[in-house]
Image (cartoon, rainbow, N blue to C red; front, top):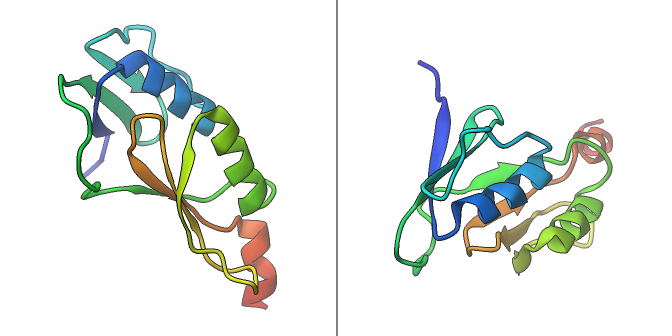
Length: 122
């Protein structure tokens, strides 16, 4: 089995695809439009146009590990792209995560980077 896409309802498919493209570094498919927009990550993030706004908590969300740097640096980058911090679960010892919302209110978490996890494992 292969999961090709994670499909997410969206009010503005292209705007939210641009946010996630910037976040992941993955391009937006050239055939994307106002009805559906695909960020070509693995798996792909497919945004489908719906008329209503998000109103309740996600039943599914992404946990993201920064590719480089630290969790906190990555959180700052994501906030600069338009996300908002929803719940901060960082602990004084450096563990924990941050739950954010993308510009349409979809929750996702940023965990510590692999480099930050190494010292804790040893």
